[in-house]
Length: 286
Image (cartoon, rainbow, N blue to C red; front, side, top):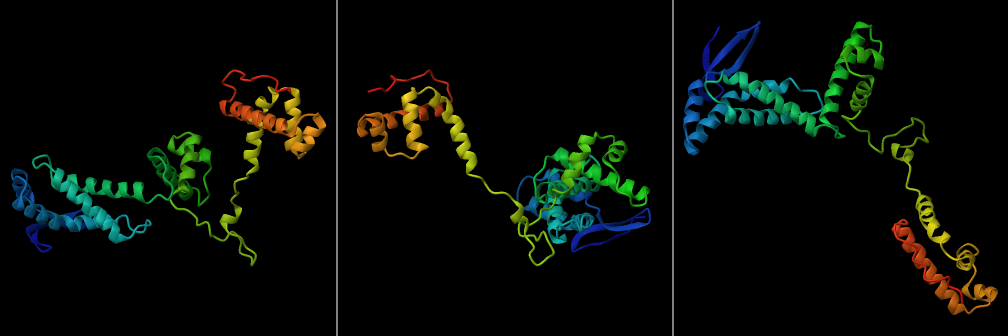
């Protein structure tokens, strides 16, 4: 049954559609307007018809947006996204290739779903993983309903969906990625409770020391025995250059030059990761 009425402030007639017992009064008869729009060049007249079409079909866009309420996004924002999808549908629609509604509904719906996919995830995950998440979520709900609320296993979900258990696990992990927990969230209900941030480890500077020591090993091995002994006395026994000179029977100035030269050689070897040939200039003996 089609009944023409006035359309939401627009001069375009509206057709009230009765289908399957549901009444939608947001499908205006705009075939003539779309034909005019497609024939007009860019300009004020075309913009005016485009705006008129947008106003006429906006209630339908808002209805579609309402299907996605209560999913973490405000209805007003969803309506704005739906309106953007409507404008895209109007700009891309080609009269003569089917009814505009048949083209606009999937276009608007796709725009809203894209908004959820790209903007609403707290942690960005690949689209394929998002699709796995949806399959796993639906399967868990269906299996739980058929088993009286019992949580299905990974194997059950895999058998139900035809996915591998690895894919099911990826989907389950993605279920927790849509929202995040604040670092200030309390992790205990007692008075001496701690926050999530308290459970996160910090960088350990000792790792850098280990890396530096491993990098210096090869350079130290290539030093003559006396130079290795000098470096050991200076940096491990914390001896002064004067005491080292006294023990070895050489001058303090010579000890200083040997330490500087050996440190430079070990540093170069460490930075080169052993890629260059041995560049020792002698055994450094007096």
